[in-house]
Amino acid sequence: AFQSDINLSSSGKSLDLSLWYEVGHSKFSLGLKGQVYSFQLPYSLDSVQSISFLGFPLIELETQAEGDINLQSIVLSPLARWTTLSSENFKLSLYGGFAIFHYNGDYILDGDVLVRSPLGDFEFHGEESQSIEELREWSDRIPSWMLSPSLGMVMQYNLTKEFGLLLDVSLSHGFFFSAGMFFAIGSSQ
Image 1 (cartoon, rainbow, N blue to C red):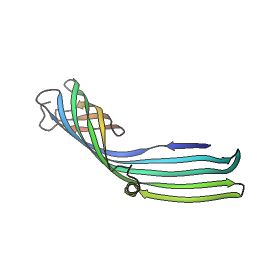
Image 2: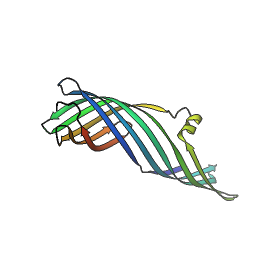
Image 3: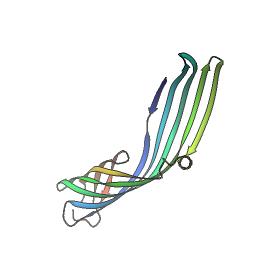
Image 4: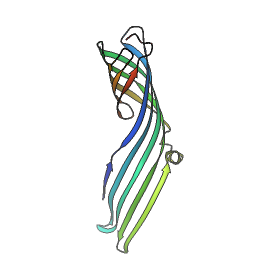
């Protein structure tokens, strides 16, 4: 029998920069979005595994571990945007495209294993840390570059003709919510 409980929580920071080019005087724009982020995923793991032979318990393994997965990435996204609602001071747009990103980082694991057997109990404690690059050497299933579809919605509120506030919600290699400012350079808004 095997039973496990994995608890995850995450936090991070990011910086986004988007450049858009309005095609003619239409509601269609082409853009390029760049993103840099740092992401931390603390986790804990508790598991119990029993090994028996002909119905008799031989060994029971209890594992408790805590650790962190830290990722840093640079993302580049070519996008197309369609303005669905527009007034003098407000714009609502939907966009789509794809994101290509490269990530690095590391993981840290600190854990205890308790082995119970008819011969007695044994306890082990260990700590392990490896970089994502070291893990890639060990397994070709951990890519260094990834490609993901990207969809989003952005709301803009103009404070002046060239400056305003925006809210951006996107779904790509994760769910992102951004709030910030925009500057319209050479725009006919």
